[in-house]
Image (cartoon, rainbow, N blue to C red; front, side):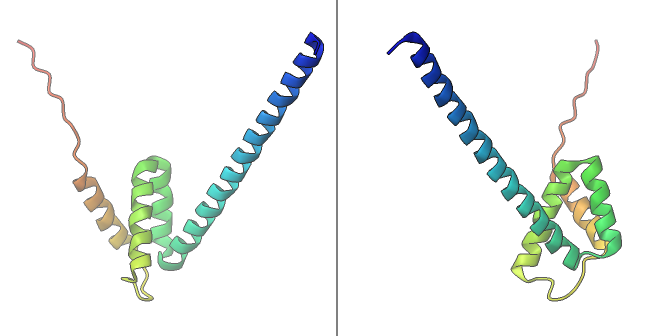
Length: 113
């Protein structure tokens, strides 16, 4: 095999690897989008309009809190605790307060002598 043939073979192999990676990433992105759409649909069924607006605002301000809150809401929904009821804005606020209280924030005090 000549050098040119070896280079062409390596290029073709590298191109196939890149194509496989791109396809895997596209599939993963599609699964993530489907999961997000399903989560949004579930949340829309049992949150009031005000609660959905608040959750969207929380997602913009602090995505980590919003993700934890969404997970908690979906677990409540899946466990069957709602039974046709909708979560109001006040209930969502209380859940957010509980979530924030459960997180321990480290405070650093600097004292100069």
